[in-house]
Image (cartoon, rainbow, N blue to C red):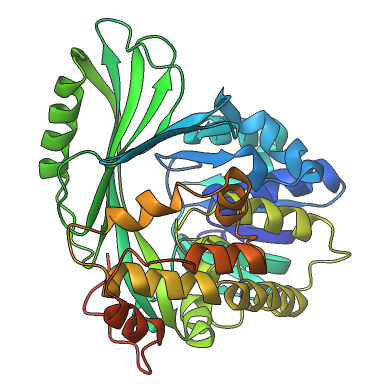
Length: 398
């Protein structure tokens, strides 16, 4: 006797990938368009992965903060940076979001029928998602948010990191985050330590590198994190969580080829659609902007979605031209081990300029000011690095 055919699902919008980008789109639509049926598909057992995301208050427009406010688990009224010859405290409010919070919000704001976990996606198209076991989801439109496409189409440096949330035996005595501590020994390009104080006796420490290579050795980075904690006099009782990652820092490439590599003519979000900051590689601000944009669309036709989201990706790519040039100076003009000097110089600039830079909204005056004066890299190498490579040649990807 033949078995019954798998259940087929019909919906207005199917979102493939339940990480930050896909999850925010789902939350925005659930809030703004509750009459629509959406389906969010995640291969893992829970949404959000294993991540800690952070952002500055100035990264999010006031009219969009309704989406981020429920996500915040910690916030601070300022942050510090430390370099060999310069330290500074800046007043911009800094927030952190934990993946467990995203998972909880999705499960408490969307009906259970809208959430699919633990299912591998076999194929996507503008109006169809095929899951393992031949289960089909027929949708008015589909958005693919499953992580990066083929990074060989982009000319990349790499931001790689290992972060640990540690339970300490005594209070850490920190009152605000350290966004960059570059007083540490320099390895593998530019190294800095990122520190978030959680409560009185928990601290998240991340060892981060702007490197020419995507290879990542968590074992070595764990040792350096332990050494950093020891240098601060922190007694670590246990590690509560660990996060590892390798993110592209884009210097150039072909956006059309990259977009097509993700899933052809299907609309894309997050890293798959190149919706991330060109220099920091962080995606939360762009994920918020895209989620609110999608939620306001009059309909979710698959072909229109692809066209509209591709247009937004193209506009972001055009706006990122200046930042990609700065990346080329960082990776190709600076001397290895001295890249920290670029950031040390940058953090001497005015707070408003720094805020606009991180939100990806630098003015023409900001761009001129960043480049003004004596460069912290050899002039000849800087002039050579300004020009993008005609053909992308990336030796590896994470």
